[in-house]
Image (cartoon, rainbow, N blue to C red; front, side, top):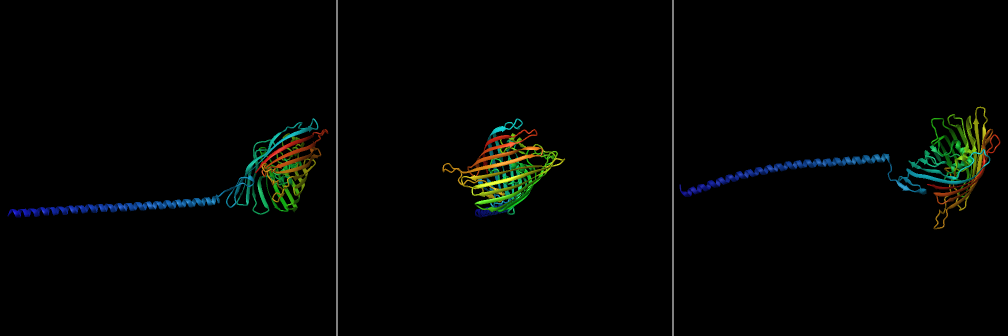
Length: 481
């Protein structure tokens, strides 16, 4: 075999070997690619699974959040129907109401700050007290809340830190009332019982710094402010009728572990004339004290200061002392009022009767007052159908020294009388004349100036007059909202 043949065969052998080697390499590369593709498909499946799980988790979170939001909204809708509270200031009284006006709560208060000086002359060495002190007194210092809920229900919670002796803060009012029917009010709690004409006029609107002694003697038996009571009233433009069952008053001195007083009041008013110019009112009142309360539940005492509350020692002047074996007591009274323009006159007469046991005779006392006012600046006191009484003076031109406006001015005069003398009880006889000047700066502020000229005659068993003559000059600064 020639060398050429050897070369040819060698070349063929090399080429064959190279071809086989290339095929083997190509086969190995294809296998690797297939394996990688399989791994990629497995990873894609895992990513798809993870993505699906993530989407499901987000959907579950969204559903949970929506359910929570719906449940929270439903809860608040059920518990608090309205959250859109609106602040208003009617009469400068901060008042929060829901948007529909069905629910409101307001901050109310009044400050009556008094100062006074006495010219006092005892009628004998047996008079008590022998002297009295000038001074000051936060007669009323009240702050509280009043409100309406569900339109037809009203409530109040008021604390009073004032009083005759500026004592500790006590509960003044805590009541709930239903007013869902026009011309009808049903209420219960600690209230100012609407008994007598003068009591039905707010202390913010009274003619004088203090109500008459004869009226206070009647009210203190089973009515007045701080008194627990339940009852109602019906009213319209031409009538007012109310009746209440009453119990004890609030205060630190009340002991609920002993018998409590129990009474009832009734007031009926007719208003035959009631228009913008004039008002005529006539009425009848009755009070019954069934249980006197106290340890023995058969004692009673009637007294009052001389129509000013600066020195409480004057309480001893008009005073029955403790009356024993008292079974019950009642008061019958009449009231009347005439308003014409800026002029208003009112008056009441009271007959007090005390029924006693153990062979003691019944007692009869009496008292009354007449008062009149004239608003010098032309405003008038309007009749309030819901109160069955008259409101205050709203100055047409509140004080503004820059424009020369001086508010409203009112002149008032009163004569009052009370006698607590009968049988062996010598509680004294009071006769007072009071002149007052009221300056209404605006609807929230007024200044009151009172001059009281009076006398109490009170004879003891020896025939000695233990009364006193007096003149009192007093002033009140009043802010109310």
